[in-house]
Image 1 (tube, rainbow, N blue to C red):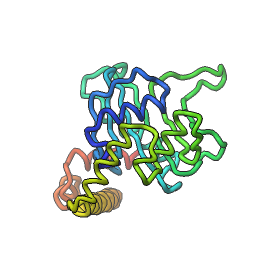
Image 2: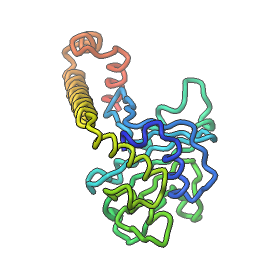
Image 3: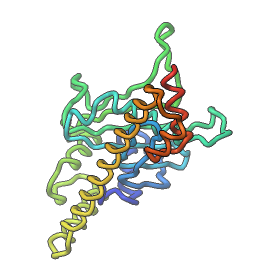
Length: 248
């Protein structure tokens, strides 16, 4: 995912057009392994971060582990996306439409459907809330060759590029396989990515522990907020926010 989809507009368009059944989607930007920071909590790392010509935002995650596709993780990703899409002074109505898409190896929802589209609803009148937030789960175990989505899932879990259905995906996979077989150091690329991921995880863990300690010190009430910020090397405004949260 990281190598094949990074800056690959053609493959990302193919993916979104099939999953959303919208053949006119035009992707303008795509990056992989994008980190989004959260001052007061856990950061997130996006497998694929894309934007289309209508400024709709897409976060696509591929999860082989059912645990990695937890429903509340999808909710959290959606909330962090939102929190980074408006600048101070922007109107809430300017918030772009967002899609969090989980492609899972197994049917994690468990209802036997190839795709699950989750939307907020107004329950007592049975209407969509239409707030622009969309969460989608794609069941990777449904590889029905009679449908475009099934063929796409075949390609996602196919090891041989020659057996793939879609040329953009096959060409990209083939290019990197030839790169590997030609003796180039693909393992170095993987090693560098693994190292970067491990370092990012360690930073995230350390950040969580620092915030946890800050909350403990705030509740203790023995140190001023300025001293807590100085001792823990945190921005003073962030410590003030933590203190305000502790009062609520």
